Length: 295
Image (cartoon, rainbow, N blue to C red; front, side, top):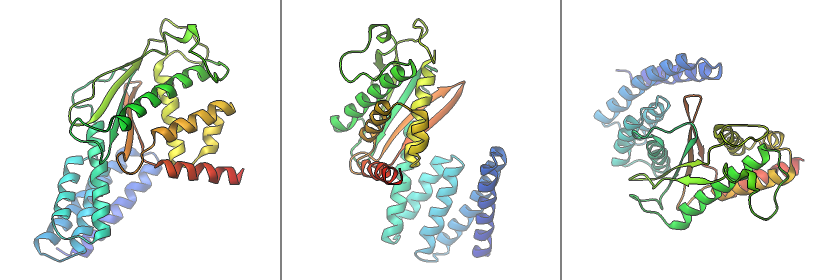
């Protein structure tokens, strides 16, 4: 096997996959990623077997693991990362591998593990160095769960056309829709299922299903993660609601120490959607300052 030649072929197929993904040809993209993964895995394992030395071995194993993640083969990625870390990778590559492993573990936590979410439910996952086997610092977890509840309530009020409530309790006609229910955390992670009081019996202008509230939250959190505050502003026109949403997102955001990932899984029209908030609080602050300077 000519390792360089096969590696180049794998990278070429991955680039073609990126192009197909950009063109929204998702099936074609996944097929190309799968071909690239098989090629790169064979190269990485060959380099390991032939003991080609560092950093060659860890770079190729990292590349193969990255492609496995694109193919959603998280167990394969976990194994390849483990192989790379079991050697003597350079410090910077080792750190990248550990970050990748955290992402793989996060995706594993996001897996519903046989739990079927209903379309009026959402699953919240908190992961990081400070989250162990069913244990975590209470402030890291409970504060974020409470913050998400506040975000959902504010979104319900905004979509119902209510004036921003600076203080006081939730209006009586919204109380049924804004009552949160939460499950116990899933084993081996900090994953909670949450639902709110049914909106079916509550007539509200602008929306009728809780999934619309979650989709609104997911869309805006993703936009903040991308640094596109202008798009968030178009979605949330009212200044008070806009500032409130930004502030609550900062509270949900990882601190980079105990918590590195906050995730939301939801079901909309029968399809699963996963949103990852990985930007640290300081990064979100920088995004806000940059947007203010431009404005």
